[in-house]
Amino acid sequence: MVRAICKDVLFLARKSEPATPDDLPVAADLLETLEAHADGCVGMAANMIGVAKRIIAFDDEGVCRVLFNPEIVKKSGPYEAEEGCLSLTGTRKTKRWKSIKVKYQDEQFRQRFKTWNGWSAQIIQHEIDHCEGIII
Image (cartoon, rainbow, N blue to C red; front, side, top):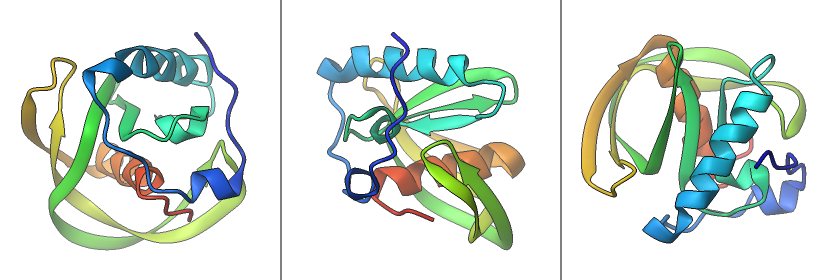
C-alpha cells in the first residue's frame, strides 16, 4: 500500500525502534511508496511513512532493496554532499562517505554484511540518518 509521506519534523527527529519480523508488512508498504515516488526519490526510511522502525528501502543501481536494522560498521573516503528529501523542503549540505560497510538483516532476519560505494552508499547513509532521527 502506498502511504502518505510524513513531514512532521518532531516525529522524524525521533530515533526509530528496531524492526522485527512483525514489521514485514511495513517494509512492503515502504517499497510500494518508494516505487510510487521513483520519479523524484531514490530511498526512504520507515519513519518517512509514519512508522518509527529501523527499515530502509532504496534503489541500488536499478534494484530496489530493503534493509532491516541497518548499521554502518566501517566507512572511508569522506566528502561533502548536498541532499534533498521528500519529507523536508529544500536541500542541505552534509558529510558522507564514499564507501560504507553495513551490518543489516535481510527479509528472513538473517544478519548480513555488505559494502556499498558511491551513490548507493550515499543513499543508505541518508536513510540511516532518518533511522537515527538525524534531520539534515
